[in-house]
Image 1 (cartoon, rainbow, N blue to C red):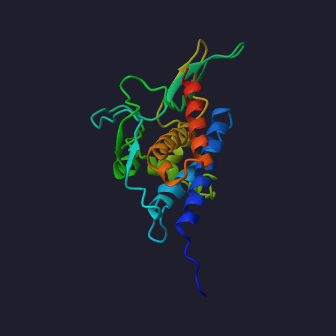
Image 2 (cartoon, one colour):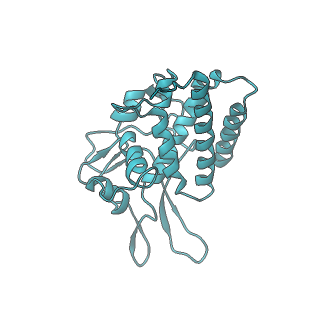
Image 3 (cartoon, helix red, strand yellow):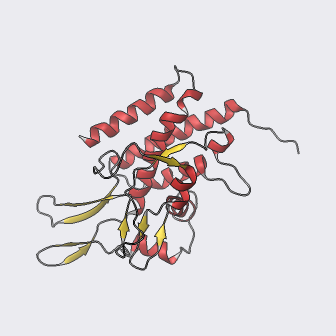
Length: 238
């Protein structure tokens, strides 16, 4: 059977679609549907994850070897306590409801210690920098989180079995954060996993805005979509 080799224009069409998919899912997530993070994980995997049998879209376009925005706080390996380097924690109370705790994707709402313009190489960004360390000392990278959600948690596939350390982070509060009310102590409403995927997608979209828009004609709608996304995030930060 003969094979068709996709052209550069084919690949750019795929890239345009993936950018549009990510922006649509990111905005939907920000409007309250956290499940969209699962689709974001698949898009991130398509863009940057190489395997022994397939190449990432950015690899095919020779755009993977660039610097990536890194919005995480610094991980201190000497710290014996659990570490949360990617999401924010938030305590809030709605009228007639008890105090609740949440993990939140900060987007551009970063503390002074987190440089929103810091960039690092792909290997460090994807596979070496620790995003979380739990109470048992298990650590998780961006790669760990994205591939678990995409491959096992409903992004592109659902696996009956999960790595126990990941399951503890996703389901059993292995970071240990709690909210204390007058009558009880409670785990946070959500896990850090899906907000983390949202923040990773934000880093990717900022990186793509810098690195790949030159591949498209200035009249292409991808410019408008990325600019609209930037305005969306700016509005959320105000």
